[in-house]
Image (spheres, rainbow, N blue to C red):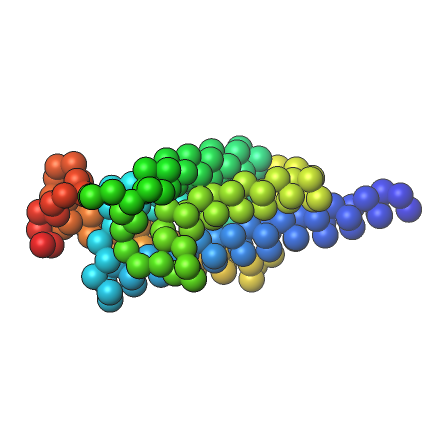
Length: 192
């Protein structure tokens, strides 16, 4: 009887873990899509640090996609957390650089709900770390190699393809924005 209860609890925890991962992936795809919409529809070109923040978000997303592709592992959760910490570090640095506006170093772009991109990126990074910590605390470690239910796996594949598409569009936009050189905040070569 006890073994059945433990197995049911483990299955329930694994399903919640899969839903959590899918939810985080969906939110990241939404955030990155919104960033590209702001870039193309409103002409708000990202600065070099904003581009690095996007790379960190893509890193978190691709770690989660690997869980859906290859079965869940704590190694990929660790990789997602490393990219979340990287996002938090980059965003905090940019926020500190721009906290006292001076010529050439004001916040870039318009505010969304009163916050600019670097502040949002710091909040997102902190929330990603907190969410993963709570998931591990409440649900425990993922069962190694656990595969999601077919519907969740299909949703993970669709979101993974969306993330890959966003990454490709972002890459092309960066090449057009910066050429094959470093991106600088004072001149964008091909889009200005």
